[in-house]
Amino acid sequence: MATNNVDIAAVLDEGRWTGYQKLLIAGTALAVILDGMDNQLLGNVIPALMREWSLPRSAFTTVVAVGPFGMMIGGALGGMLGDRFGRRTALLASVLAFTLPTLAIAAVDGLVMLGVLRFVAGLGLGGAMPNAAALASEYVPRRQRPFAVTLTIVCIPLGGTLAALLAGRILPAYGWRALFVAGGVIPLVVAAVLFKLLPESPQYLATRRERWPELVALLRRFGHDVGSESAFVARGAAGQVRSRGSMRELFAPLLRRDTLGLCGAFFFCLLAIYVGFSWIVAMLTAAGFAQVDASNALAAFNFGGVGGAILGALLIQRLGSRITLLGMSALAVVSAFGMAAMPLQPPMTPALIAMFTLTGGLLNAVQTTMYALAANVYPTEVRATGVGTAVAVGRIGNVLASYVGAFALDAGGAPAFFSTLAASMAVVFASLAVVRRHIGIKN
Image 1 (cartoon, rainbow, N blue to C red):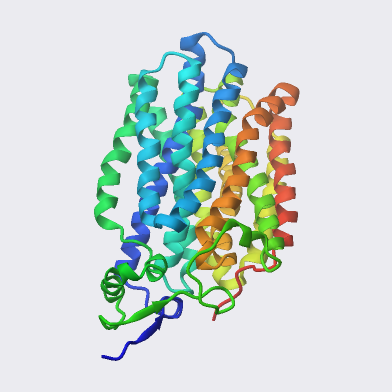
Image 2: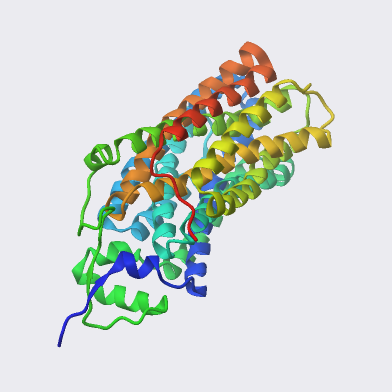
């Protein structure tokens, strides 16, 4: 029987956008919601821990930083493990890796063990993101790819919104330990669902001959007519047949400038976002706001990012990523400077909530749509590694956010805090301007 050679990239790029593929995007998005929720639990409970353990805000600086440090390592390792062992396998392992230590935090009584468990959880939190982005990009046709990836990654702030809303209701009634129990049990249940729902990436399966029968079955579920005897090839950015990649390729002449630009953008954008995530609640409670109002402000900061990122993804489809991302970065600078000029004192007014929503929306929108840009920049054989490397470098900014936010609040209060966000987003603007392989307009 004649063998039919199938270019998997061409089949997926020009294929249909089926209901089954939309279900898979929902599954990856659900994993990211869990990631965003568990990542922001600590920021919500710091005021409660300060009171219970009789510690100042500065005592928690290093504990806040070790989680992102674990995410930095987990992002790099998770991306490489995804390229080697499969995106689905690495994603599910990452969910378990942040769920179990989060559940264990409910039993801690000191900073040292809290820091250890946050570091271990950070390994899983970091590993989930590059594999979720790679899966989302490889489940769908080319035209829907930016929207699918952004719709997945936008669930980071959606998860943060969920964490803030849970904190506002669980903390006053049941205490901070109950919040971490909820943050551990919910992902365990969802992980079991994802184990049954999510298949492996078709691009990854194409590079493993022994798994071609699995790929044939998956493509048929996507609506493609492929024969049982089909042979598959995976092609790189220039059309060459490839099966494996390495981190070295990220800095080859074709990709070096884009890699450096992405790393700079991820670094400063994650710095700005996690300055907000880590210290907004503590800043507001110190200024006299009630815990529920402070948590609601953090929820608004997150929730604005959901709408902003979806709007950004739609604009990328119409305008391309260069105009969209540079425009949102510039508006983020203006918005953050606007917040620096506002008085920060109780009560929580609609105008103040609106500014938290707008500023958080713009910061999160830039960050989430950058995952789609990174997935576009790198060919499939190094996609998870490329996204993971950019995110890992960004996590250095995430780590520093703990110290930068605390320093800004101690040095200049809220005006210095929000000016720091503005300065960081100005550097993001410059870094994104360097990237050459932006997402173009597709007709």
